[in-house]
Image 1: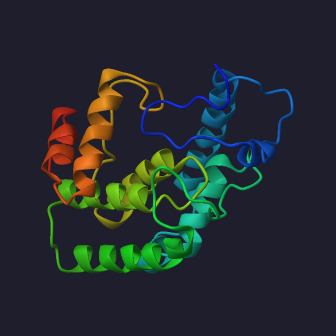
Image 2: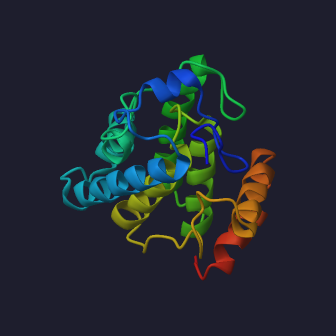
Image 3: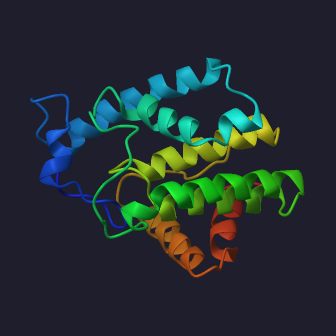
Length: 203
């Protein structure tokens, strides 16, 4: 499968994005997935040992950027850097920084004042990160890892089960997940919460 072919709802790589690939021998999506998955495992290992465990440390622009770089920086030159072009999803590039800052401040308030139960809070965090789409690619994976880390460290909850299959590959399950995110775009979070509940996650 070509590097330029993505599953439904994913950010399409363009020539400029691919120019940031650190490996010249990669020509297929399958090869790229293997590299990215290996990098993500390394990023998760870093996350398990990072001393950044306070709310101010985690809910910061610097942590959002570093997490993306740790997850994908061995594969992409632009990992951890905000995108500069408009996509089929996400806010205008000029709004990434202010929107991300506002989201992080919102999360602090949601946690401090217990606005939502842990499952709805997680759904809202993950959706808002995806909706902003700060980076050229890898936003879905980054948002799920970020949400799980917030759950484990700040909410003292287990990480979520996001799927029974690989969400980065086209499937019925991915279709349901993407559909629930699109409804959340309109402020309707029940489908996303129900999707997560169907995976065995509880509040």
